Image: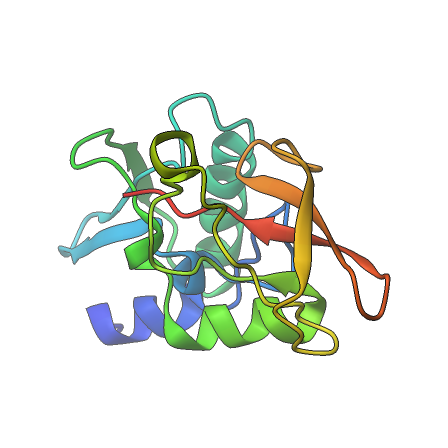
Length: 161
């Protein structure tokens, strides 16, 4: 008999299509898992309301669970509460660093108010001497930065609260 704990473990196999080093569990988009005799229901929250990856994630979840023998799965999307980078797991933050993406620094960018930019450490050489190149990176949830010491460009996973 499959349990909710088993389902959570299976979901660790579903990668985020935009940042494949992360699973949907690492990303924190899985809100709840419920299991009855007839139906497995997974509730997901997008990282932002227009996230194009959510349909792919839904399809990947259903496909994986079918492969695991769970034939009747429903994936529901919820926008409340809104996703926050606080939902990223520590394991997910470490995976981002290892992949070359700086994880969120647990602070909202207040540079607009105080003219002090958020310090984003380089995920490659760990230097804090970095600068933002563009507020928009390869996806809407990332900004593009460059290290002033090793000169490598890198993405920064924006902090959303």
